[in-house]
Image (cartoon, rainbow over all chains, first blue to last red; front, top):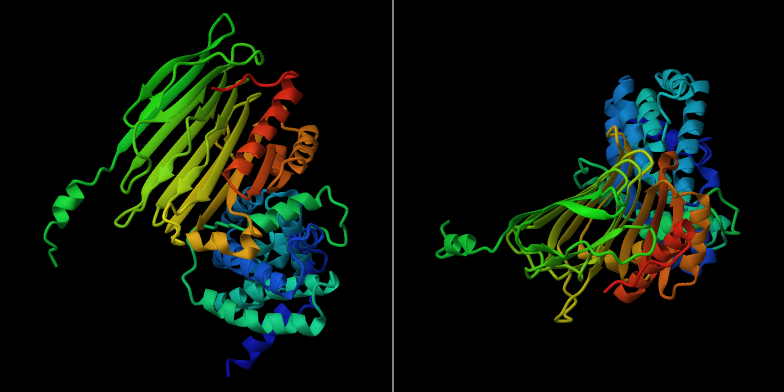
Length: 224
Length: 285
């Protein structure tokens, strides 16, 4: 078994009860449902697979990795943050990423996680926006997670977040969600075994369109 | 290991390094003209055509290719500038085809420079990716004060032999910067042909594109108009949002086929023209 302390730390960081602000976001799932493009559990799994392979692994992962390595280097973190901002082309996606990042940092400031307070100060001064993968790298690194642990927790949070949103949207039941997440553990393990891309890139057009349509749509259970 | 004939085959590779360099300028009369024009093979361009009632003096140039399309090893680069106050519309005669590439990929780089107060519409037809195509594209846009740029970047996969063949790789990047070089928006993706068959990615649609407009006039009113316009186009699923820093609008589009994509792109273009100039664009040949 892995080092118990490291395992317990990863469990806490990945706990869905941890106040990281993710509860209010569906990343397009709500609109895909109302547009009739996601109807059942199989569609939810396909959505989650796309989010993991074509957004998290290709875009969030390299940013998280770079942010964790750059902890304490505010200029480097700000540059990463600016790139994430430029690459999020839908308003609610950008705002969602920033809000979740800020919420995560706020919790870690309260917990006295090393580096969290300085990063929050930089946010308040406008030096960084604090997008989620950048914030994850800063505070999880500060809390003691290594890169493997941080990547696993971050990817798991995507799978669990999709599961939670799908349950709230009544697309699947809670047990079905857990079965989906169990299946996605294999997906996450497979993508973590692959090399991390040097430069972030993403390709989830259906979900991105749904986030854009959410701005003017009537479905408003989630913030995106 | 030496493979007999391999060197000869490599040297017979019809790879191209080609350059297109166009610069539009505004004459004292108000008409936009081609102040600089260089087109190396396989590029060819029409003369500057005056097809629009508004904006007054706008020049339209149709890019043509004298080649078979993108072949392995090709390195094509184009620069299109609209100098201060110029108004230009650039399109292509037809879709460019990226053929099978078994030894090396092809690359196409486009740079747009839009001077103060200028309007540049760069609306090429989508690229068609044949099985085993391996393509890297870039679109680098620099937008100066008071200028407007509208662009389109679309792709569709096609297997002429209908054997479920897929393209090998498509890496595409669109970057929008201001006149000081500050990055305003960045769209970057890298996929293989199998991704277009994933329901969670494409929602059953076959064609994907992005259409953007930045600078003067790319406001919330146009966003609402574009959303309503897309809702009226058959066979597409699209969204419109505001770029970072309110630099402009970005539309991501999925379409069932190239015809539906073309319909959506033209509808968005017409809507923009009607809002800004009050008249339909002139008829294109």
